[in-house]
Image 1 (cartoon, one colour):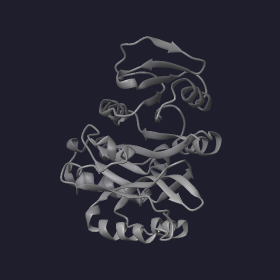
Image 2: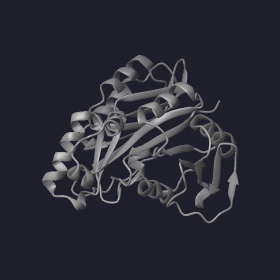
Image 3: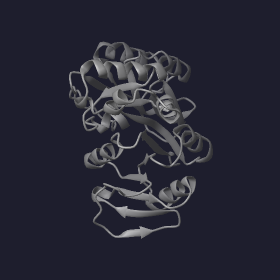
Image 4: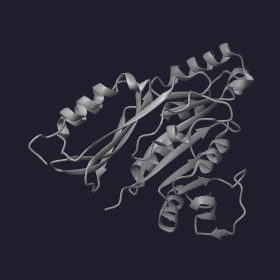
Length: 298
């Protein structure tokens, strides 16, 4: 049994920093990624281009690939999965379609793909110069799970707060990062491997992020577990891993309140939680997870 390939959608206006973020993600490495974009643009390419039916593929360092779309979006995604078999897919949405339309395509028409999260980049400088939020930008923001307010070095602190207020007016639940050059730790965007990670470096005076892991070989009561997940404090913005219940084991993914769960073999429960100020709630969450254990199961 294979899990669906997670897909992250990166949206935002022309010049906001999408390609800069993609380059940061590729430099961070650690996973076999496929990046889909309209054209290769600023991504460094020094390998032979492989021409496919719907994409051109270029192998990058570390086993990652960059794919330029030449056919329809759905066909391009299927070809990437068939030819490359990546651990995750990143779509830079410029010129491809509206964010909400792409979300619909992924969730309704691509059964081998799981929408991991939608990241929207807001250009703080352009937002101050042109404060009107157009139709496309509104759609991008409303669909986002994570918003990067980028280029904050080009505007005053009061202007950043004004941009943040406009973002919050369109999306109350998204996690916000204020960045220069999209300088956010990619692990905060895409989750962690199943291991403890040090406290994330606080960027530009923002509160620190922490993570912790829960591991158990005891089966969990699925009703109690889902109740606990539905009541996680707002400081938890990401959780992922494997959960084992009496009825089977599952791949679990939580991002800003949205839960995805699908059958997947695992020999134990192993979950990682990420959030701002998470240490305040760590013991209570761990105790709640222990309380989900089915005590008469080994």
